[in-house]
Amino acid sequence: MKKLLIAFFFATAVFMAEGQLNINHYLMVGRTRIAIGNYTGAIEYFSIVIKFRPHLPEPYFFRGVAKHQLEDFRGAIRDYNEAIRIKPFYPDAYIQRGMAYHGLRNFEKAIDDYNRALELDPDNEAVFNNRGIAKIALQDVEGAIADYNKALELNPNSTTALMNRSNAHIIQGNTGGAIRDLNQVIVIRPHYAGAYLNRGLARFEMENYAAALRDFDQCIKLDPRNALAYNNRGIVKHKLEDFEGAIMDYDLAIALNPEQASAYFNRAMAREILGKSGFEKDYQIAAQLNPKYDLNRYQVDAGQLAQQTQQGQQPGSGTPNQTNRQDSTASDPQTPPKEKEEESPPRRKKVNLIIADDRNLPGEEEEEEENGLIQNEYVIIDLQPIFLISAFEKNSVDYERFQYYSRTIEEMNRQNNYNPLLTISNKPDPYYKDVYNNLILIFNARLDISETSHNYTNRGIFKILTGDYNAALEDLNRAIKRDEENILAFFSRGNCRYKMIEHIESLPDFNDQLSLALNNSLMNEPVDPEMGSMIKDYELILQDYDATLRLHPDFFFGYYNRAYINLRLEEYEKAIDDLNKAIELEPDFAEAYYNRGLTKIFLNDIDGGALDLSRAGELGLVTAYNVIKRYCN
Image (tube, rainbow, N blue to C red):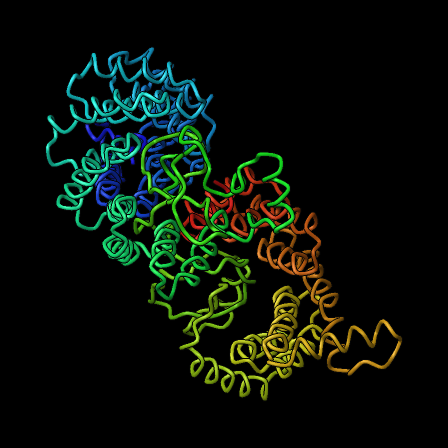
């Protein structure tokens, strides 16, 4: 329940001379965006400040705070490092960096930073609390209690320190001490639902079920949407053999949190005891949500059971729920207490109730709660697609598409002298299809007058955008025949060939066709000409990108697209080399950072991948934060 204390330190003010850019305004807006939870917007503003005032520590610090909230811990640490490099005596940066290391479960480094922060700010109660939490994670319970005691010396009414110390007492087995701390919390904050929940857990461990029931009732009264309280109140009723009442509470817990595995497991036992239908399904759902509740993993056959009985062993000692409380974790609400067995049919005779605990106790990984932050949104994770030459209205602003400057495209636009303008994007606008068809008609007329490489290239580009790939390929072949140094014709022909493959792969029976084609080729049997051509086209695509880069070695889109094809061919090292070059030529190439990050993660370079994705997120590809949370933390 108790998490690290996060402070944003909005009192920090930065005063500087006004220039063409109002730096104070950008800093103020960035901090306001953090305060309202718009973390990606805050990163955008602080990045602007950093671009124009790279010597200031504050924008790095606050951008780190924003990334921290998005659970981009490595990116946050990189920004905190820079803030500390510029301003070595910066306690707030050490505190935040310590919390970021804590997020990565690097507790030793977190404690080092908290120590440094206390050297600079020795009376900071929050740092003692945070250091105590890190010490708990390292099983240094005495050291943690000493830190909580120090926090209470500085602030005797610190409910945070009291809650933390009560958790430490639980780990020590000092349930009475935990209850005394929680009593004090309730005196200070009578309407603090979490204190009643934790005291109810402590009283439950002392088998004082009536008192535990009163605490869970009060917690629910103060926080009617607390699923853990309903689950735990159901357990108390279950212990008191009020199985109908227990099932009602489990129902409420599941309604509030349909992913709470322990509630399904407990309800299954209550239903089974009463002979009610649905208990098998509940066991199944609990096992799907959390494999440690899969009873099939712990079943023993009759022979094993008889052998255990002859040897004087406890027949159910291998069940998933005989875990000692000291090995549990506050952040995993499915950790069981050490209790007496619950009466149930013979095959589950030694399976215990699963208490839902939200206290900060060391052990398993923390289960994150959905809180509406962008890193918690469901996204389909895939490579950013290739870049195509596309078009946009001269006076339009499309915030959904990144725009990169290309001198080659600008020269093409100068020669064409029409609107819409050509651009390069990996998100072509489907609503422009009628415009593209009209432009094809324009270049039909121009080609009637002059069959130049330039005109064939333009018509080929627009035919790609309308999906007429065969006709586009013919135009681009003619363009290259007339001018073997036409960079955009080679680039577009490579793109066209890839889009043809992409289209074929999207057909419903593609997988069967591809399998048949590959099998035939292995057996030296004839392959359908169209499929055989498609299989070989990857080599032709790479040849077109090679030609593009030979003619224009600084054309970073060529490196990016060639890397994409190499990734599809599982040539990961070649792809990374090309993405490195693309980023070298365009340091703000968000899509290149994104694809390189995914590739590094696939190659098990988690730190490198996380930092690349952090940079992609910083540059506007906000889905990167979801990938960081799911695969890097």
